[in-house]
Amino acid sequence: MKYIYIFGTVTFTVYGQLILKWRIGNYGNFPNLFYDKIIFLIRLLSDGFILSGFIAAFVASLFWMAAMTKFDISHAYPLIVGGLAVLTSLFAIVFLKEPISTLKVFGLSFILFGLFLLNKGS
Image 1 (cartoon, rainbow, N blue to C red):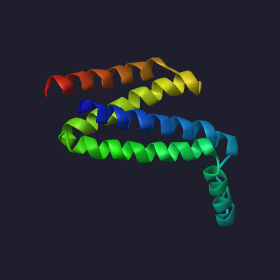
Image 2: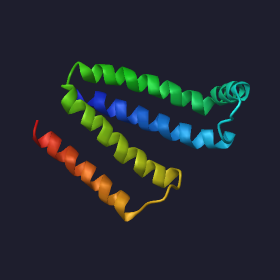
Image 3: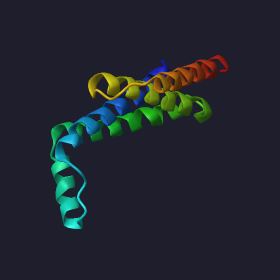
Image 4: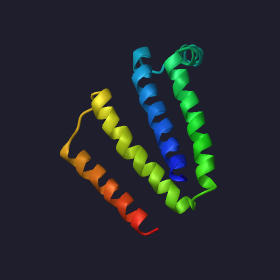
């Protein structure tokens, strides 16, 4: 049951990152002038999907706080970071059509192997 907190942290963080990347691309580049930056950020925050990404980040932080009550940080944090790296990359490849390479697959495989070893050592 305690791993649900890790799963929730990863799930909501991945969702937020993918949604932000997907929607922010519709608004162009970040402007240079201060006033234009404020207008740009207001436009971003008025996008319901982007707002849902921020809400997901908040929910992920609640799951993370719960996970901290059940795990040593030296165990939980690598699971979170590894899960985020693997799932965000895979979903970005599938849904955002980001490129995939042999080195990316190799690197993600190393992360998964490291997560396996981490759980075996607990």
